[in-house]
Structure formats: structure tokens, C-alpha cells
Image 1: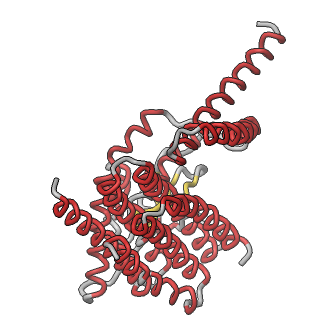
Image 2: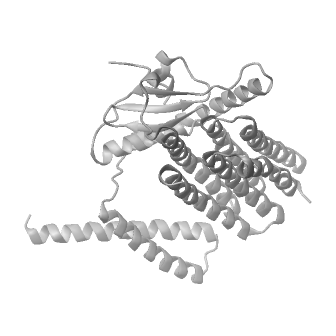
Image 3: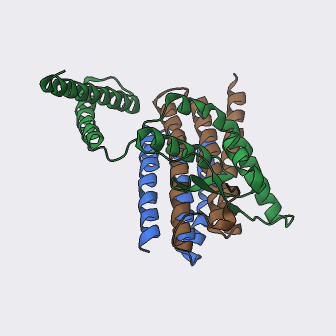
Length: 172
Length: 110
Length: 84
């Protein structure tokens, strides 16, 4: 492929992505206004075109890479039961704290987990790991140390230290 | 479903949501450590909004209003972990000057 | 008065503990946490008022506030970490 051909395919990809943004934003506009009149459709197109241009400008800056695998996102189905059970744990801990049975004593835990790596895939993996752990009420991520391949979390009701990784990562 | 049955379910959902939000707000007063307090943002941004959105969808079905209620609940669910993480990290940096783990906090060693 | 308006009124009581912590706690980070919870309560109050009054436009307020509260919270944490 010659230099001119690469330039054309690059422009082609950018135009295709711009149109993808345009369609997504326009559909979002029409969903939010909830009425299919011509004025709203035109206004939505104008707004979507502006938003698509800005989105594409930000994308080509390559400021942050984020390329998760689809199967990582599909594992989100495991989260709702975890959120419910953790909410129960947190509220039970509050009850025990209020009634004087056991004061709340949250703790930090740092466990090893393969989190190093450069590029969109590794960044996507770290971001989704952070989100999946932090969405459950009993645990949230304080930091992910790529150099030491360590995840620092805080737990309201701490699990036994030797079972931290299993309790947190094992459920996801 | 009869009107009364639907209304009863909506009342149950709203009572659960409002009760949960009240309990978590009171928890902010009763628990003093900032890292412990942050945990009570979790139920308020996941279960509370979901119950309210469900009540609104029962009333409105999947009309524009029902969809917007779902959008709000999903937005809160997605953005809450980000904000919790950022707040915890800021609190840790203020406390220790850095957020990295102390040796006493490490649970496994090579 | 309907169940949604009643729920909104009761939910507004949640702002009292948040306001107390915002006003009285000596640590800025604790005040930020209370502020973040107050923002969530406000979003839910808007949802309930929208349904209670039957005003479609109030739903848009809730959506906008949900997005803006994230941005505002992140700005506060950024300053908390480095400058305040």
C-alpha cells in the first residue's frame, strides 16, 4: 500500500468514525426529546455534528487509551448480586456500630494482581477492574500500583488478610 | 395489574429507596473516618436510584420519562465508583503525602 | 399531593445530616463526602419532583445534574489532592 493509499484509508476511517459518533449522538438526542418532529430532528443533527466533531478531535489526540475486551464488559452481569450482598454487609455493619455490638473498623488491604502494561488493553483492564471493585459498597479501590503490580483497596468490613485477593477478585 | 396493586408496589419501592437514602445520610453523621464514610455512598448510588427508577417505570412504562429515569439511575451507578475512587485517593494523599500502600497493609508477599 | 411528592419531601430530610457535616466538620475531605451525598440526594429529589408534578422538563434537570455532579466532584478531588 502506497503512502497515498494509507492517507486515504486513514481519512476514510476517520470519516466512518465521525459518522458513527453522529448517529450515536443523534439517536441519544431523539431519545431524550422523545418526539419525532422535523425541528427536533434538524436541531439534533446540528448538535450531533458538533459533538461528533469534538469527539473525533479528542480521539485523535490519543490522550488516553482505553481498549477493553468485550468479554470483560460482558462479565458485568455478576455485579448486581454483589452490589446487593455488599449493601447488606455495609448496612449490617452500621447497625452493629449503632447498637454498640461492634464498632466499624475499616481497613486498607494491598494485594498483588497483574496490572502492569502499556497501551489501551492494559489501561482498559485496570479501569474496568477499578470500576468493578469500587461499585460494590463494601470495597473500593484507592490506587493501582503498576510498578509493584499491587491493588490498594479499603474495606468497611475487612475480610481476612490471607483471603483478600480471593474474596475481591474471585467474585468478579 | 390493578391500580391499587401497582400503587402499593410503587409505595414499597419508594419507601425502600427513601429509607435507604436516609439511613446512609445518618451514617455520614455516625461514622467519622472519611474512608469508612465513603462506603455509604455505594448503596445511595446503586440501590436507591434503581428503586426510584423502577417505581417511575411502573407508572410511566418505557416512555421518554421512564427512559430518562433509567438513564439517571445508570449514570449514578457508573459515575459513583469513579468519584469514590478519586475521593479516596485524594484523602489518602492528604493523609500520607502519597497513596501507595504501606508495608503493614500488604497482605501477600512474594 | 401524591406518593412521589411525599417521597421527595421525606428524602429532603437526608440533606440535614449532609449539611451538618458540611458546616461543622473540620476536615475538608469529610465535607466533600457529605457534599457528594447531598448531590445524589438532590438528583433523586429532582426525579421524584418530576414524576410528582408531572413535568417532563424536570427529568432533564436530573440527567444534567447527574452528569455535572461527577464533573464537579472530580474537580473538588483534584484540588483536595494538591492544593487545599
